[in-house]
Length: 195
Image (cartoon, rainbow, N blue to C red; front, side, top):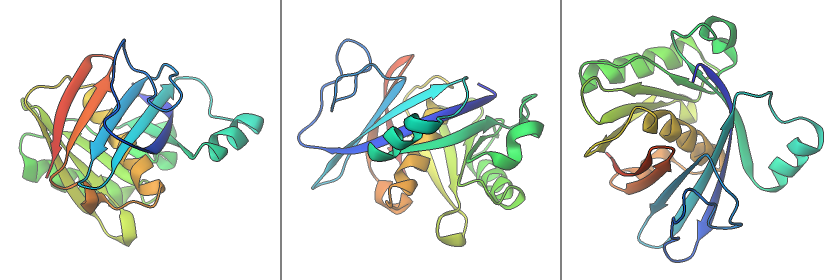
């Protein structure tokens, strides 16, 4: 992964959108890099996540992305060769795995302090299907633990980008607590619980 430019579009959907034939946007049917679906008692949301190793959006693409409500951001893997070059600009930082949830929380919060331009940190849990997402919303650090019965490592950066898009759309991280998200990425679909 190292450093990627990511676009997230979050859309309210009615009913539960079906994910069939790979990853397709439930709104316009286009193929996507990843899809996150979440629901509250009164609303359902779909987040389409596209990432690339190419350069960020420029010119008309930026105008188009803004018109669609897309959140463009930079996601960087801490410890990668690109980290020292891009870390100060990163919106989402993905750290190396921590052994315990407490260590992961501390690492997530430390990264948010060290890189004040970063909005979301992702710290996978070593040997477990889970991660801790750190957020710097409202000027203070907070964390969310994400758990899955089983999940490949590729799920956690997707959730970091989803959370960045969620916060950028004016939503609050607390709204996700207790919800189950369907994360449909390159390795298939996984149910993830936020607590």
